[in-house]
Image (tube, rainbow, N blue to C red; front, side, top):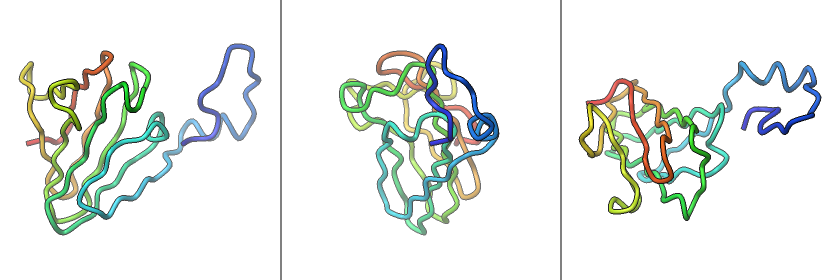
Length: 129
């Protein structure tokens, strides 16, 4: 997680916190399945790097309470296609390419932003298929 997040009212911003605002922390994943965690919030770039098809999973709010407004950036560096989907599709809704719930995919060197817009609702936008 980037330095300085989260901050509370009355906190004094240090130089390290201010400089951390422009930097991303890398969360490198090489397996075939990754489920987001709370520390993926804020300025983290999750890279998926696997030659086989792989899954980027978004958990229910009950499992991981990402704040509404959270943006998680995912970049597929591997040759395998990355599929973005919910851990529990009946509870968590992943929406992309309009108002249709689906599981968008990322080809190699493509990225997407996963934006939490409600308790268990995420909108995926970017270089998705």
